[in-house]
Length: 369
Length: 126
Image (cartoon, rainbow over all chains, first blue to last red; front, side, top):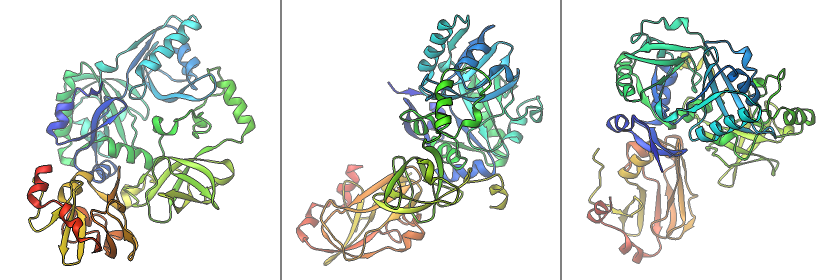
């Protein structure tokens, strides 16, 4: 079965082309991926990301359950804060990466990836039971529409629709808010590397009105509706993980260069495996590659050094901002120093690429272009 | 959106066009194809002099999200390629039937021309 966003008709009206992604028929683009991409980097764009999931974790032991099942120590995350983290298997590999929002004491909403709601809900329920933690876990994914407003003009756009001073909502803060006539959850987060906010709206019937009001408020900034195509190129220029690509086949946070998200001072599922891996040290790591020659690296392209295979591309595209091929790839630890030159095999032809420091596109890009 | 189909060209069901003159054919992709592919950002052209058989891979056209192989609609020897596309692949979007042509072939088997569609038949496939 293919699921549709409650805003499917709105997208159709706006001329969207659709694609299937993780069981959802979602807009891949409205006008052009490049134009949408640049609109978000320079001004503002509106995304419907309702394919993402929403799961409530509520109760006195909610904090304990989150600490047990993620790499974060939840007691460090105050009410009103959002946190990016990963949920691991016992063997240290990532089941899913997610943001959790601490909305009230003992009340959290987590945002698993598209199609992961049942897996995560069941996993959390199982772990709560195994550890005798009395927690209410409720999958409400289909009750919420999620809108992301992203870009340097996102705050100016949304500010017109609410009495709450949005400057008072810090980076990775979350709260309830009345916006565009709807009470929703706002989180100062995003997947574009730009200033931005994400709104969780329920009941979903209200979301259509909110969507149009945001489009209207953003008119003076030439706001554009944005599809999954630009969402992917925007995140890749900032080296953000796409779970389906970068965790494919089972990868640990250390391999995915997410070690910085791991809070080692608490016990969590997968910790022992991570500690062992850390000690051994000889594992492939996610590596950022910029093409020197012409060609666009794609998922699955082989990486070579002097004709020897040393890695594989998980995500690749033409960077709309830079006009060159960029890729993330798992590469053998000996060949991934910044400045190292590797070949990416594109249709069998080696295209030279250089290992670079993330991100591919920095904050200053929009000012100088 | 109305997509242009030109009366003086031959077509394939896979949305290539051919401009046939005596023993040569200029080949490109149709207005419909460029519109479906959206922003074209990379083109890989064949080498001049290469012999291709009908159905062989002729070139590769990439948009931000997709890779599309263009197959030879007829057999021939590559006599010219549109090198301009290497620096300006978006020309295919802007001018699919004129400046955005891909390659020119010297036709080796005239009988294959009969397998191509005329403009009316092509319109019916869409």
